Length: 71
Image 1: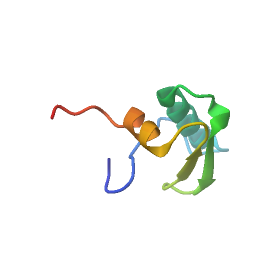
Image 2 (image 1 turned 180 degrees about the vertical axis):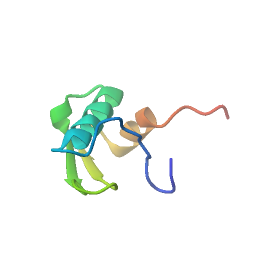
Image 3 (image 1 turned 135 degrees about the vertical axis):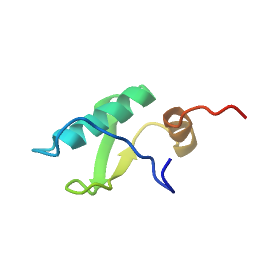
Image 4 (image 1 turned 90 degrees about the vertical axis):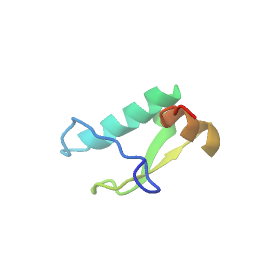
C-alpha cells in the first residue's frame, strides 16, 4: 500500500497501452478473474490509474491483492 493506493511496479513500457494491459493482466491473475473484468476507468495515460473490477465485491478484491501480514 502507498497511502490510499495500491502501488504496483511493472516491467512493461508505457507505450501503446502495454503498461495498462500488464496492469490489467496482473490484477486479473491475482484475483483469479478474466482480464476482461478489469477495466482502466481513469488515468490511462498517467502513472496513477483507477480500475474497475467486475464480478467481486471491494473487500474480497482488496484482501486478495494485499499481502498477508503477521498480526
